[in-house]
Amino acid sequence: MSLREYCFPEAILCEIDTPDKETALRELVDALAAAKAFPKAKAAAIWKEVVERERQATTGIGEGVGIPHARSSHAKKVCMAIGRVPAGMDYGAVDGELVKVILLLVSPKESTDEHLAAMKSIVKIVRDPYQRARLHSCTSPDSFLDLLAEIGG
Image 1 (spheres, rainbow, N blue to C red):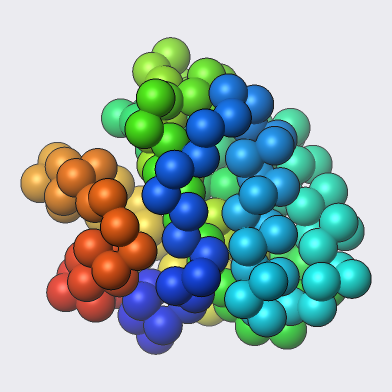
Image 2 (image 1 turned 135 degrees about the vertical axis):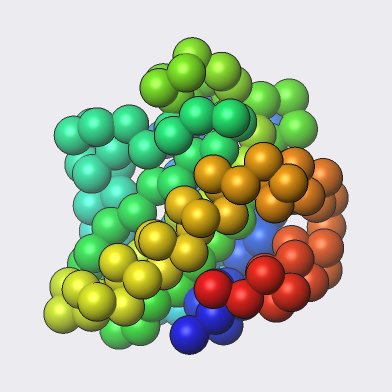
């Protein structure tokens, strides 16, 4: 499947203004719950899994991008939220740079292959300087969705 198919338009937040990574992750998880990617009652548990995964090793992979992710027994399908942080956020990125785009992926525990394929597609976009620049230039849900649809993955 294409990354576009995992992404919920209502879960693309273009103006995250918190300097706190865990709060930003909470906003993205809550946006997925509000978009009915999973039940709202499961949002706190999923957020905890995302944060626990993040504490194991940063997902701030550099070049202004964070790719937090978790495989959860509470998720019933692979879903993705996007957060744009115009001012940048101290994310503990491997290169020390501020993160300006967060691509959150949540997958069911049993969807290992699909989760890994989605992560591979995300990393491919982020590692390509041209596509990464395009990702950073997105300022609206539609621009993110159009980019993901065009790139495929």
